[in-house]
Length: 318
Ligand SMILES: NC(=O)c1ccc[n+]([C@@H]2O[C@H](COP(=O)([O-])OP(=O)(O)OC[C@H]3O[C@@H](n4cnc5c(N)ncnc54)[C@H](OP(=O)(O)O)[C@@H]3O)[C@@H](O)[C@H]2O)c1
Image 1 (cartoon, protein in one colour):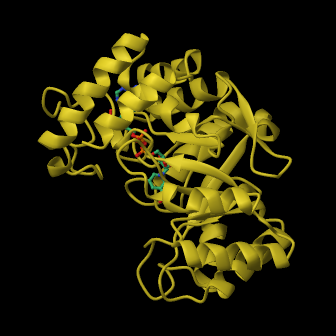
Image 2 (image 1 turned 90 degrees about the vertical axis):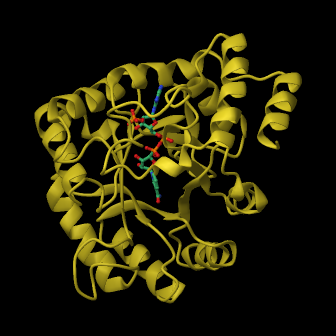
């Protein structure tokens, strides 16, 4: 594994992190989830990305991680960076959703209980909710750190101006934003319009989620929607209409370039995200140890020639 300093902080993160959004819920096979977490750790993936609502049902991915921590990883706590988040719908009533101080404090206590952790390494505001004053959410994060419930804080899915405001409140209060998390992959590049630059200017790291566009940037859907895939599952967030002709046409051409590079499309898509020097780490989501190993093989070839980058750009712009 390779490790990179997270922004201007002293914390190093693995360039590949493991996300527990899908495939680690109570509906999933626990033995498989456990094997994926343990294999990832054995291969140097020290960073596990959680959120209060990951499952299904919501909360169960944190419980799965808690079980594995207890049975396999407890003695390795100091070698792990575990993150969680609050901000999306988690429980009914006025305090189970959004980014108020009340929600964040209630949620982190629940998350600590479910995982059995004493503290999170990183705690995120999962989203800007459009209503809560940014200052209220940021001061809750600051106090979460001051109370020892988390070591660092992060932001996810903030519009540019709100992110700017948030970075500056956190900085003023001496709890700078460690890391900014957003969607970034070959098909969705919104963060290139300013947020990536902002995170760098602010000294924050950047971590990309859905680097494979939930599987679209792999060879999985090139010939239809396979059984058991995320698009085929009722609980999956990848909708079948996202597996459409223009996307598959792009993936088919990209797959050909990957083949010429001697790697899978998944490997090339991860390498492409990491090629952007502003990216600290990519969070991979996997449903098997085989996929995990394939994705780790990305590290065998992360470089691109200018010609390859131009060719990829042409395909993406079509
Ligand atoms: N902050 C946020 O709001 C937010 C939002 C979304 C995600 N995240 C974080 O980012 C993590 C990753 O997101 P994601 O799961 O969407 O990531 P992703 O890497 O884009 O998609 C993962 C899916 O791609 C397929 N896949 C992965 N490796 C493969 C390979 N080598 N060959 C073929 N197929 C492969 C698998 O699909 P199948 O299951 O079909 O096999 C897997 O479930 C999440 O777990 C979560 O921690 C954060």
